[in-house]
Amino acid sequence: MSKKIEIKHPDKAANTGAYSAGVLVGEWLFISGQGPLDLATGEVIHGTIEEETLLTLSHIQKVVEAAGGTIEDIVKCTTHLENINDFDRYDAAYASFFKGVKPARTTVQSVLSDGIKIEIDAIAIISKKG
Image 1 (tube, rainbow, N blue to C red):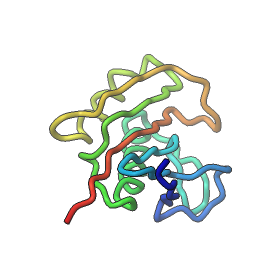
Image 2 (cartoon, rainbow, N blue to C red):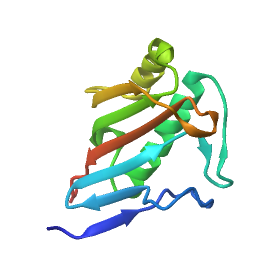
Image 3 (cartoon, one colour):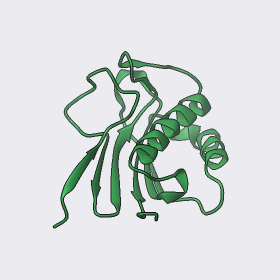
Image 4 (cartoon, rainbow, N blue to C red):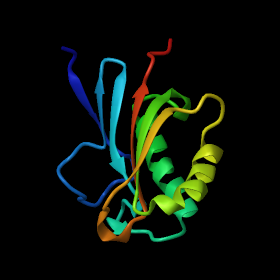
């Protein structure tokens, strides 16, 4: 098995739990569930479903970039929505974030902590360039 390498979110200063933001194994990057947090303080940033979706995706993007990839390298996302009735608005915000081929995706309704509306995890393939 390839060695596991921890990938950290570059902005994370607060302790938000016992997990790695990302784990790189070979070319596969597994990104833990991200939410609408201020990672300097650990505080939730409450907003509309669109705002929380875009903030959450920006956290995922930063983890991918810390591993040497780009948002285009994401191949799969799993989204947990606090309210499935937010799906259409979430989907529009999500679609605006990804250009070209969108990642495969699963979206479910879940009980989420701290009043957040969304949590997303992702898998990416980070190709060694050059």
